[in-house]
Length: 414
Image 1 (spheres, rainbow, N blue to C red):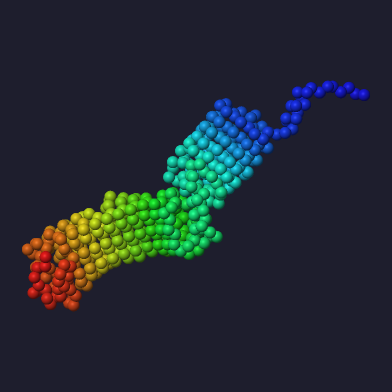
Image 2 (cartoon, rainbow, N blue to C red):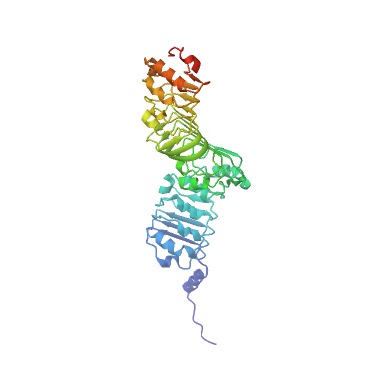
């Protein structure tokens, strides 16, 4: 019989190891080598700690480790998660204490079957877009996120509002720390008409394009930072804003626009049938504000500021409780029926002469202005009255209504 060489016991053990491919790899405090990832296509778990070239090696070899279910990469200076897109069976991901700054990196993980995600120690969790990106990436996931402990509860709230693609006619939300900007939530073609958002921050790069595709008619914001120049909803008729900082406004063709207790950095052009602005702070001069019914009250504006008002079609004008001294900005008005100038600083009665072309003027309130004590006030008032069309009256709202026929007998009304 042929000679058979004896088999070394160590060789048998080595062969057996080779037959069973690696299921788990762990590296710590070393520089990774290409041979470390050889024959890793059956790998289920990998743990890498403090390996500075981990990003480079994982970018190169992740596509060959598609069966990985548990990945731990800590203190490895990771800056990108794109290599994870190959891991279609990944369930648990621990990437704590790395250098991932952009929360949009999370979008890569959206289609993976993750159940646990550990992110603490990365810059992205401090980014204002972080929770919005979590909601956008994982809106269908049953996922635990260490840096977003109430993620699951908020996801349930969002799903309730967008169940079966049907959103109620009015959404009121004051529970979300960041607005959920994902396409499932923004399926608005089912008839959503009114959205009320309070105490909410949101990612502007996602929010404005999506809401502009909607069919809402009413928007209400409170306690937020907004750029209303980016809102261009074709069906929008009404905007109400309270307790907000507004970086820019550029809106036209609205029916109703209301601001209260806001800080307004910039206004381009604002056009609405009705504009109500009260208790607001303006940080710059608007380009132009026009409305049929215009109120800017308790804002501390001056007559220089009022020059931005385009009043050719204005019928009701309320500029009460400001710091207006001179009414030259009214000289081109013709359609006013009601004017409230109470609690300003109008000293000269002659300023009222700028109202003379408003033939339908019925009511004027000059209460608590120095012009009422001007010795020429009575003369100017009668002259303005004589310019107003027969049959209408000029009223100082603290007492008497004066028709044209009565004006010559009228006394000075203080």
